[in-house]
Each structure stands twice: as C-alpha cells, then as structure tokens.
Image 1 (cartoon, rainbow, N blue to C red):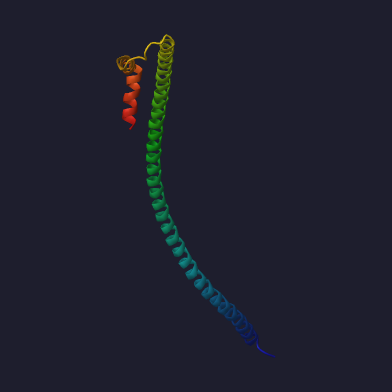
Image 2 (tube, rainbow, N blue to C red):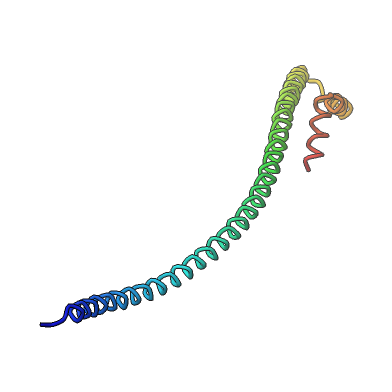
Length: 158
C-alpha cells in the first residue's frame, strides 16, 4: 500500500491546489476592488470639485441678490418720495380748486348784484354804467386776497 507520507503529500497538494484556486479568485476580486476604489476616488474628486463650484456660484448669487435688494430698496424709497410729492401736489390742487370755487362764487355774486343794479338803472331809464364803474368793480375783484392767491398759483402751474 501506499505509504502514509505519500497520501499526506497528495492531500497537501490537493489542499494547496484548492488554496491556490481561492488565492487567484481573491486576487481577481482585489483587482476589481482596486479599480472600483480608483473610480470611487475619482467620483469623490469630481464631487468635491462640483461642491466647490456650487459654493462659489452660491456666493456670487448672494452678492447679486444683495445688489438687487439694495437697488430695489432705493427704487422703493424713490417711489415713496414721488408718491409723497404727488399727495402734496394733490392737496395743493384741491386747495386751489376750493379757492377758485370760492372766487368764482364771489365773482358770480358780484356780477349778479351789478346786473340787478343795471336792470334797475335801465328800468329807471338811466344810462348804462360808465366804464369807470366797471373798472372799479374789476379792480375790487383783483384786490381780493383769494383771487390774488388763485392767480399766482395758476401762474406757477403754467
């Protein structure tokens, strides 16, 4: 029969062959793992580059937004000042309209009283009022402070 040493040598050779087979498989897998590790490192580098670029873009966007925000704030302030000026002008115009209405009412009452006086004079067969009386009526109307204010305001508007 075979010697015990030879049997153990065959068993050892078989075990070494199996070990060699598994070592070769392990080496292939380690090679694949090394390739995957390299691609993973490249992916990490690309991700780092993209993150850095996104941070720069975000900082630029913030700076742009701050500039636009300041410009928008300035425009809002200018708009509010224009609205305030328009409100003041509107108030001034309302006051001028009220004064003009008062002056028109006053002139109308003066005209109606002068017409009544003319009608009474015509019925009495008196001659019509002379130009001096008309000039005095116009002069009195011109000396009225409300009329003067109205005329000066209308002159400033033109």
